[in-house]
Length: 380
Ligand code: F0G
Image (cartoon, rainbow, N blue to C red):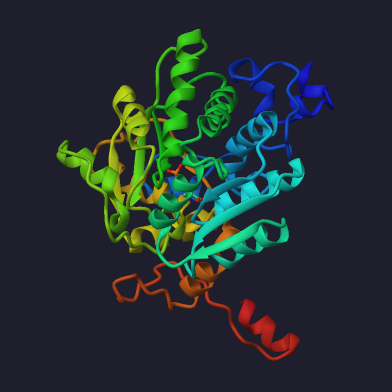
C-alpha cells in the first residue's frame, strides 16, 4: 500500500520504515523524499576487482547528493520536535549541504562549521544557496568538531553530526532498503568508506535489527575503507591497541579527511559483530577506482571510490572470494567534486605529499576547430 501512496512518509525511503524509528506516529516529518536510491550492477567495476559481480548502492542519488540526507531527515525532524532554536554541524561538506537543505525546509536557522579552504565548491555552494550561516574555521575537520561540541554542550546549538543518535536512526534504514532490494538475501560483504564513522555504525545497527526481527538469517561482513593518510580506525584494527587519533589527516578525498572520528566505538561494533575488517587504500588507488566507477556510467565522489579500491585489494589477497556477493556503498555524487575529476582526466592530480598521481584511465578532452570533417576524422 505504501508503494502507491502519496503521503510524504510513504514516499520517503526513510520514513516508510517508520516502525523501526523512535518517533511517534503523528510526528511532523521534515523530508525531501530521501532514500529509495538505486542498487546498480557495475560490470566494469566488477572486472576491475576481478569479481564475477559487484553491486553499487548509490547514496549519491539522494536529494542533496549524499547519504547524509537519510540521517538528516530524522535529526532535523527531532530538532523541530524539540523546539530547537538553532541547528548546527561541523562538516567536510556533505553534512553541511544536507543540514542546510533540511533546516531550510523546517524553517530553522542553521550554522555549518567547515574547515576553511578544504571543502569542495559544490558542497559549499549548496550550503550557501540553502541559506545556512557558513563559518569557515582555520583548521581541519577535527578542529571544527571540537568547537561545535563545545557549542552543543552549553546549549547554544542543537548538534546534528552523527554523534546525534537520530542521524544513525535515519541512516540505518539504508540497510533495510538494501536488504529489500536484494530480496532479503544478505550480501557476503558490504563495503563502506570510513570518515567520522557514522555510516558504518548505522549499517551495523540496521543489519543487527533486521537480524533480530528474523527478516534476514545472517549479517553481511561490514568492511570499512579509509584513505591511507587519514586512517586512525584502520590502524586501530591492525594493532588492537588503544585508539589513537591521526593528528594530521591527509587525503584528496576531502570528505573523509578526518583524524579523530567520533563514532569509532559504534563502528567497531559493526565491524567486529559481522566479521568484517578495516583497510586502507592509497590516493592512486582511490583515483583510479573512481574513474572505473565513472566508466560504468555511475560515478561518485572520491571518498566513495575507496570502496571499489578496497574491494579490489581484498579480492586480490583472498579476503573476498571471486563468487561472493559484494555491495559497495557510494556515499556521494560525482558532481560533488568536479575539480578532482577534471584534474584526474587532465593528468594534473597531485597527492597531498606533492607527488603527481598518474591517471591510468585518463579521458582528456580534445580541442578541435568547428569542422565536421576534422571531427569525423577524430571519431574514426
Ligand atoms: N563519504 C562521503 C561522501 C562523506 O561525505 C563522508 C562523510 C563519508 C563518506 C564518511 O562517512 O563520516 O559516516 O564515516 N562526511 C562527513 C561530512 C564527515 O561532514 O560531510 P562517515
